[in-house]
Length: 108
Image 1 (cartoon, one colour):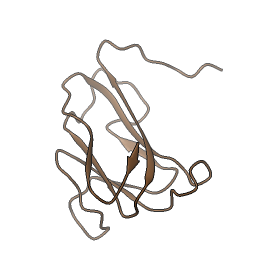
Image 2 (cartoon, one colour):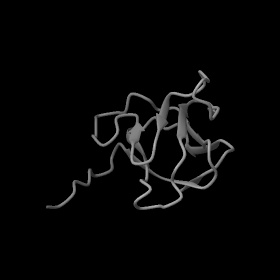
Image 3 (cartoon, helix red, strand yellow):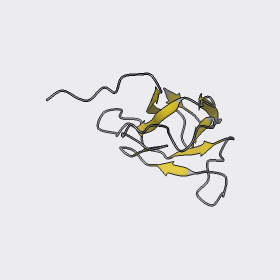
Image 4 (cartoon, one colour):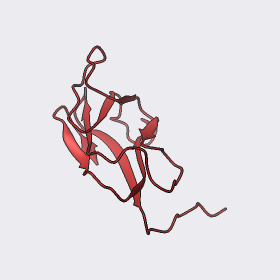
């Protein structure tokens, strides 16, 4: 998913959410990923480090979300998730798992 300088909603409110993770792919995978991505639950964030409108900030290679990579009986945050970047064309991966979906563990 490509994130630009205008906020976009990447996940809708979901009462069945078990896990939601956002990974900002590193520049070694996507050469243009050099900016910052701001995330906010419930409303759109502003792409500024001095703003109090964001819940988390990602630099290339970082991840965040409701409970990141661990499945729980239910996720602590079920609101909409919005992302915006301070640089156009940043690539992120958003993963959401819901109640009733099998957990997929990586195979060795």
